[in-house]
Image (cartoon, rainbow, N blue to C red; front, side, top):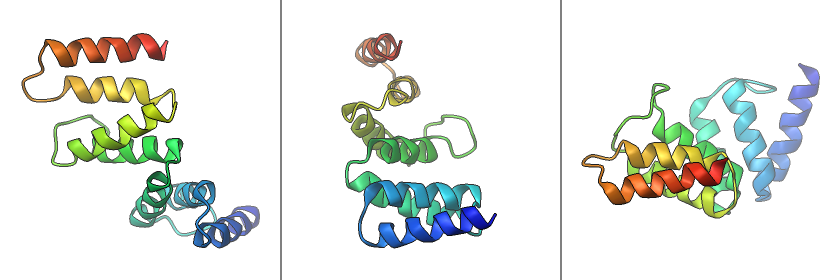
Length: 127
């Protein structure tokens, strides 16, 4: 536990200086409660800060959080924001984002042939 607390302190110092990787890692610490008290709001805050700097893994994590409020991809008011962050992660080359983006496309209301074709293309690229 001491090592986690030390790591969280170092991440915080670097995150406060604007380092995207440290912001993301601090968000992970808050999400897991490692070295800090578990706090989902702080996790999202730090993950969003890293995502806004173009850190693809943070963009993907933020998309997952927004898209899966109860562990199931659903159509919610956060869906457009989840899609935006997921597209950013795909553009950043984060491989796991391809599958999530395909899933998000397929839960859109009135999924059409164009969305299905895009989803299929994403799934092919993921493998």
